Length: 128
Image (cartoon, rainbow, N blue to C red; front, side, top):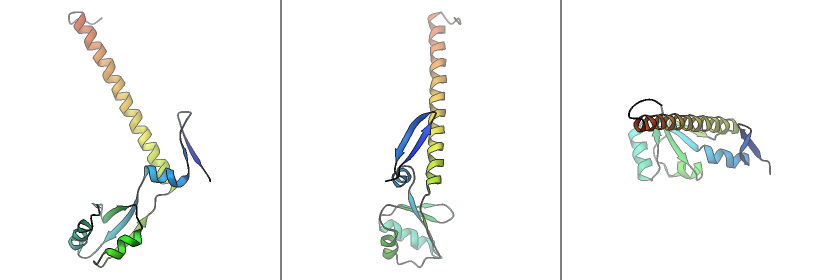
């Protein structure tokens, strides 16, 4: 089995198969639409399928796309399957790593500010 390793700041951050990497970071989606969009969204809700609106109706799925489509009665005007690529997974990984780094930096700044405030409080409001 082929493996893909992602390195972040000189350390291996992930090492798994391309499929598992894509599944861990991204989701498969059906891109749907219909002339009668309210009927389509009502039907999806009745089937217990979550969806979002993003220009079209976006339905994340883990089961077979055919299984979902075969249960729909609404005539579709748009039907696409979005399968994330390895490049999509890599970009998502970078976005999450950057967000984590920014959050850690903000915590560091907050901790330094709290330490300074504590020092000022201990010194009667005067900076040390």
